[in-house]
Image (cartoon, rainbow, N blue to C red):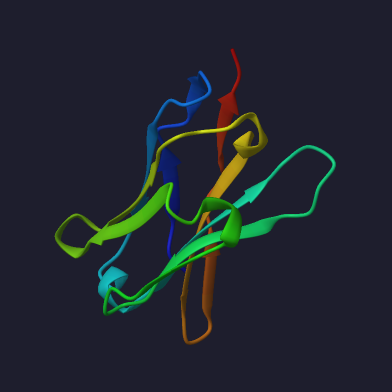
Length: 115
């Protein structure tokens, strides 16, 4: 398995920005399809954004045009740049990595959007 560690969460005002990072262990990061999910209190975990091993990206409708997922294979890290944040973006954000039978999750990082 691959170990994933998220960072970068925190409290931000509506309209603000945050950048989440997810660092992966090992030497297969470049092969992993990576994704960010989020889970708000009382709600199911939902997919936010994905990036394939070759850099193709996809976004959930609620975050299109505001969030950007990227990866740096040299640093074994995937990022989620979040702009124009809204209170409804408040959630625990989780990083996920998949390749063949590998399906790893990070521990999550809290993002709170509030004035």
